[in-house]
Image (cartoon, rainbow, N blue to C red; front, side):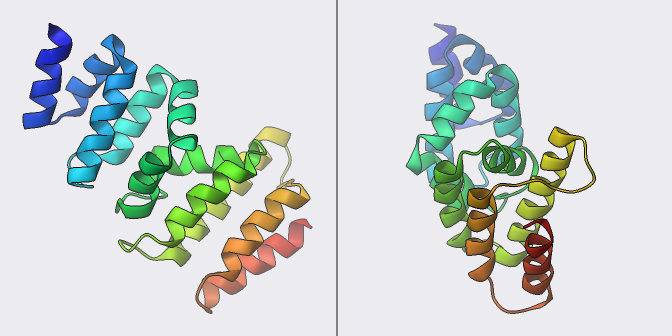
Length: 177
């Protein structure tokens, strides 16, 4: 009964606390209601708050849901003003560093087409976070990415408008090749 009460409450008011409680009862329903709320209003409640909260409960289930669910990826990365910030930025960078380039490419396509922000700023955040994560993983002061990872980043950097951020990111990629 509590599950259905929570569904009604989230539908009417929202709230990360209620989403947390629902995710502990029925994770799939929490994902479904999150997707529904994002469809109705990308600002319904903090995308990153929910993303981080759900990741805290089950990172593997969130990875499977987001990387394997094009509609949810499009909502988080392709229409949300919070695309490539906080928990969803960390998630994307972890896909790249973890060698999940097909999944990361699908998400980056969504980021590229997101009308709510600057693609160059978002790509800078992705590259910075990916490099930092790579350095943490290897314990070095230089990012270590393979050819697929650098090709993926280079491809999306090339889709940026010409400017100082594009030049900076192109140079950073060249330095690690």
